[in-house]
Amino acid sequence: MNLRAIARLRRPIELAAATLLFAMMALTAADVVLRYFFNRPLAASFELTEMLMTMLIYLGIATLSLRRGHITIDLLGTLVTMPAKLEKATRVLFDLVMCAMLAGLAIQMIQYAWYLGRIGEATAVLKLPLAPLAWAIALVLLVTAAFVLIAEPEDNAPANSGEPL
Image (tube, rainbow, N blue to C red; front, side, top):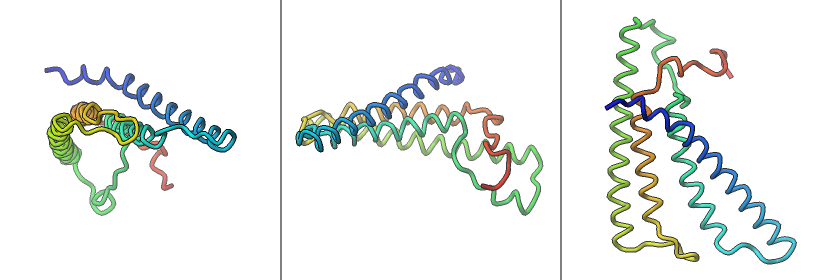
């Protein structure tokens, strides 16, 4: 299986995250205007915002994983200089551990999605089923696990050119 094909999902995931962020902003703005000027807040705006934020967090994790944009701390780099091969082996080991952890989370989320679907769990006000949200999170976690494996080392260049913040 060519994992590089999964990299094509980067742009759609970034677009989905941006769309969810815009929807949250528009929903919050509409709720504030309706609440303070017309005394008619949007029903269940809190529920919708929670659901949008949940998906936004997982899409953000996927995007950062492909870009290798997560915060990293180099504990040994200031004390010793590691040979290039050892540094690469360390990166591969940590990528494999991260991939396994994300895959484990995805498996747990799949089990939870089955459970939510079986019991018919829904939101309190709008009665929206929660299982599709859990399935979407599981899918994003699986894609993120693949992203960790295919992210290129040169994508890990520091944004601030190595200078302390």
